[in-house]
Length: 415
View 1 (tube, rainbow, N blue to C red):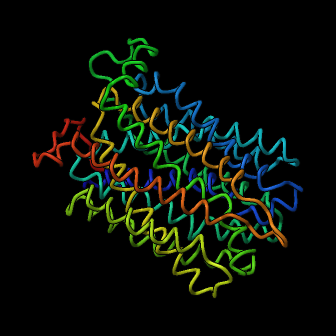
View 2: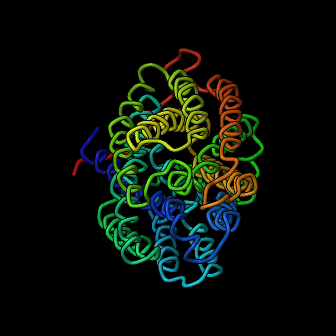
């Protein structure tokens, strides 16, 4: 990589850190927020899914325009809206206003992930994308190590509003870096992409058979995380018997483990094979999810070990899946494809979150009842995606044993 490419990877990872942290912050606050706002698990599940539903809707609306503009400007527009929405979340005094703020944030935040992956695919060839996406996805782990523990600590001191205000401060620094140092990304505009009809561009993107297969797989991949995540903190506190003050420690150790394993998984997906890495992640994830959702009162070291292993399984599916998907669209359709894919992921995740809220219930002392049923659903969906991903890999050069077709990108200067 050139120095500028390394800078872009670091910047995108930092941006993903803020977006993922904003999305994930609400779930660990469940044990604090539900009693503070006097809401039920079903209401809390809806609050979490509100972001996903609005994100999915905005992603579909933005898909037709995603390939018509310089990706830097497109990124800045949606990132500004994301920061404003997060500020509204930090100032919301009631449950209805919090839900409204989460919906506003989702309108902008839900598109950012697709823009990040479009930029990544524009600037890096297929043979490098596993490694690059492995680094970018360390943002997920960094949110575990730095963001969520700090957010929970601030929430324990100043209330559940504080983590959102912290995200606003960090995001402003990222926005300044994008304005000053990220160069325009316009290679996809060659051939008159600006003048095309956005609606026709969207229809053409969503009706291609190879795209349809990828969209279906992406939608189902979102089921696992969205089902378990909203009630993870409450389950840990009330079912596993871990004190709420120990939650930051669990996220901290788990995050450190995934920070180191994320880049390794990315390299493995490039060297061993993206689908093989996905198979490994699926097998590991299914086993650990079944174990985790059936745990009762458990010592802290065991809880940390199980959580860390579960996230290794998640990363071993997420990173190779994204790398494989990136080879499906053509460059002129890349932004629209990523936007639709992100939207379907958010919408299906929102549905999964709502269904999870309907499956589980709150028992005596705040215990989460029927959590093991979520484990069975997650395991089943993971096995189905294994077969769906096998079909996807047959559409990309890696499966045929041919060298990947690398689309020439504009020269990237050193800085």
